[in-house]
Length: 142
Figure 1 (spheres, rainbow, N blue to C red):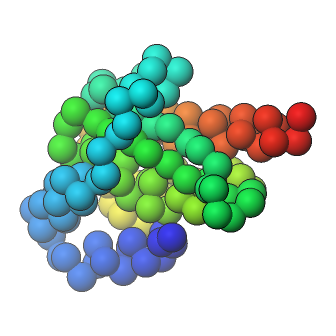
Figure 2: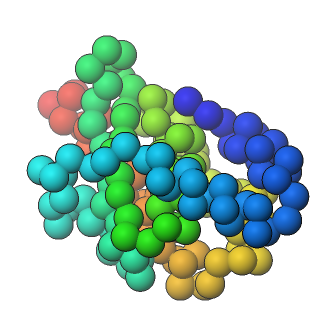
Figure 3: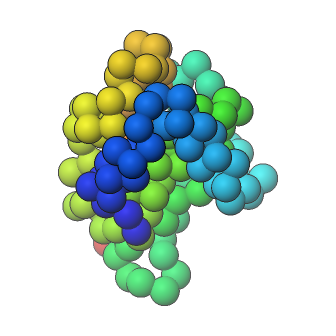
C-alpha cells in the first residue's frame, strides 16, 4: 500500500514533466497482467478514451480489504491506473471512498499535462474502483 503523500514525494524527486512521464510509462509496464477472465464489460471503464479495465476483489488473506487488478491500452493512462491501484489496493472500502481525484491531480500536477478528456477518464476509473469496492462489501454483508 502506498499513500498519496508517498507518490507525491516520488514525483517531486523526479523534477520535470518528461521525467514524470517516463516514470508513469515505467510504472504501467510493471503492472501485473490482468487475468483474461476479468476483461468483461462490467470491468471496462466507461467514459475513458483509452480501453481501461479495473477489477476489484476481496483480499483472501485480510478480511475487509479490497485488492485490484487493472489494464489499459495506452502507456500514460496505464501508469496513472497503476498509481491509483497502488493507492487503493489493500485498503478498506472506507479509505477507497475517500480517494479524492481532484487532490490526486492537483498534488501530482497531472492536470497541467493531461488533456481534459483524460482527466474525465481518470474520474471514471476512480468511480468504477469505488463502485466495485462498495459492491464487494454489500455482497459480503448479504
